[in-house]
Length: 377
DNA sequence: TATTATT
Image 1 (tube, rainbow, N blue to C red):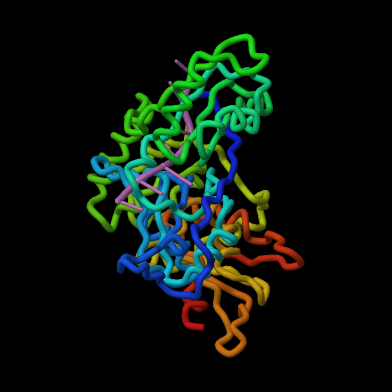
Image 2 (image 1 turned 120 degrees about the vertical axis):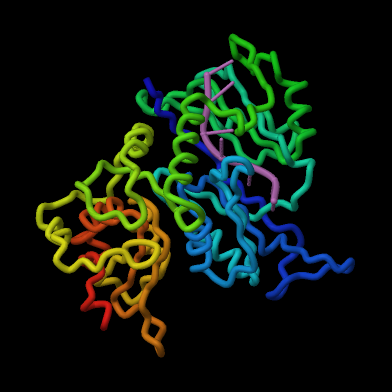
């Protein structure tokens, strides 16, 4: 049986050090660039998000100096986090304000300033077990905060029992030596009023996979090999039940993988599918995949609509590679429509079925595959 | 009794 776990986590903003300065890279007296106000770390990215999607999402905020989705050196799998360095510190701030907390598929991404990279901040993550079930996240933080600055904390909760603590959790300190001190001070100790002592140790390295994860990874690696190099790295595994086989732009070998991975994903939809909305799937107007995926036409957006709206709407359905709001050249207001590119036919079809007719504010969206007619407009 | 935070 698979235990579904949900978590509670504090969103910690690391905050840039120093005072705010005018735009542009900050050059310190020793000549090195200070990117503490432009460089962001993004956590809890969906496993299947690609570098291109990552760049596309954060590029919608402002000009990016550099960005990197961090991958496992050996397997190439996303490690679920990445870095974005903006040219303008204001855009970094804007990215935090608009994208932190964004829900993408099953994840809620976290966007915060990156700490300066250093060996002292690595391996500072602790695994805690034997916690009293009554202890909440705040209590746990209070217990550990005497040893240093806490970057993240979470207590694992059982979803089937509506959020009851499982008595285990994680604490990430800013510095490894702080984590070491916390182990010395708290491992084997009874928290105030607790009946049993807690266990505190360094968390297992993420590279030490469970059997399931290893199996998944094996299949993913095999699938990538099978479908070819680089331009097929956007290989996706649908998180929704198959809608019947539409043409797939870049993959014909995934049913096994779908079955493997669907087990761990829930079906998540924004709005009920109506029979009417399925008419948009009739197929007569389909243009087929253009380049990297399936282009979707979104009509009846408000003049204030921006790219983040489209990410918010379509992200939960699967792999989105690009979003674009069409704006009036002079007013810079949305002309009422936009486009979204999705990698997988099934996910695009599910997004269309769910979002066509979706009420956004006081407007009812019209969503369909882009047609050749619209293409010429 | 284990999630994915340092390029």
